Amino acid sequence: MDGTILRGENICGCIARKLGRSAEMDAFELLRSTDEIIAGRETMLEWYASFDRATLIGHLSELRLAPGVKEGFARLKEAGVKIALVSITWEFAVRWLASELGADYAVGTDWEDNGTIVHFWPEDKASYLSSLLAELNIDRDALAATGDSHGDIPMLNLASRSYFVGKHLPSELDHTEHWRDADIGKLYHIC
Image (cartoon, rainbow, N blue to C red; front, side, top):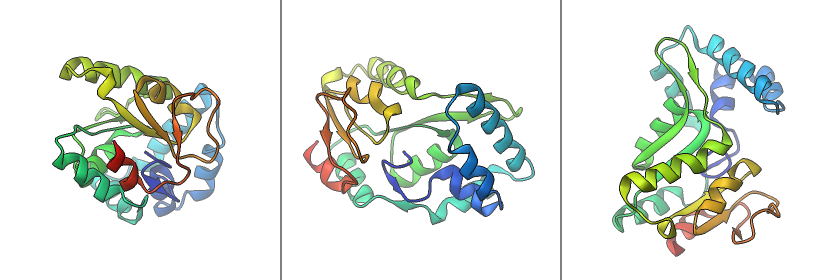
């Protein structure tokens, strides 16, 4: 989601800025190991502790969508296509954006009411979509996916049609079209 259908500031960065935590969030963006990311997510929950989710979601109104996202989603919905937003960011934010755009499914890292985190990792994206395809009795050949990072490689390789909108197309994506910083509406038009 961040970098694929959003441009500029990402979800966690937007919330952090509104909470006065931009410098800490910038440091978090540099983390790579699983243990570091887990610790970073736990720290973010400490920032969020005195706010309800509705307040945190309210901060997201400043996010900038990639060109064509609303139009592309509308065309897909008109054609009867099911849309899933699959992200490693906070599920409450993914669900909010899915609702705003009319997506049918949303998944991400869950922050449960008891304060625990159910982590969602890049490698979980393809597994989630495989399960969703099975649940909906849809063939993999009908799956199209868009991504922007190395974490999207398994998901993009699962899809029969995939589009990479990041700067540099990873070599592991042999059947993926590279549409750097694409107008998402045009991508969805050709799907």
